Length: 150
Image 1 (cartoon, rainbow, N blue to C red):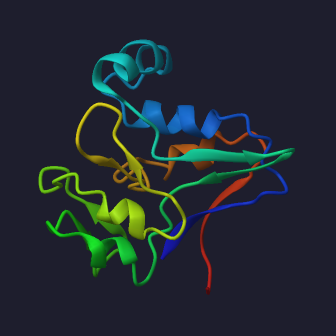
Image 2: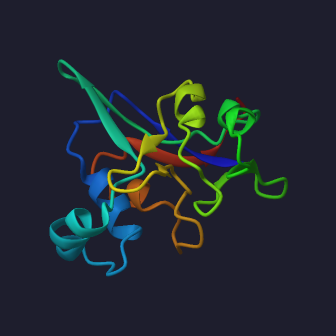
């Protein structure tokens, strides 16, 4: 399956991927409204996070693992592996906010929603024409959306 792969050598930590993610998942679809209004009012948060140490940085998001430990840890059935797409799918309505998935993820790719007792996790911009917004927005091509044998 196609996944988003970060490349540390090209990431400059500009956070444009986070803004693109936030905008793609906003109600308005507008960067300024998403950042200035929906982020504060609704807790709109990117599914991707930049980790930086010194001059090195990398954009981390859900890897949609083949055998995801977050799914095994989920006590409510809010996370499951889609057998057709291979994506790790999150159902917000089923989530009870126990944070088991958050602790089980080896990549630190699942985050707490800032306003709700729920998680925030990459959905690969499901249904978005052109694929994940973060990949499209990255100015350095530090993110690749591709199928690899790994």
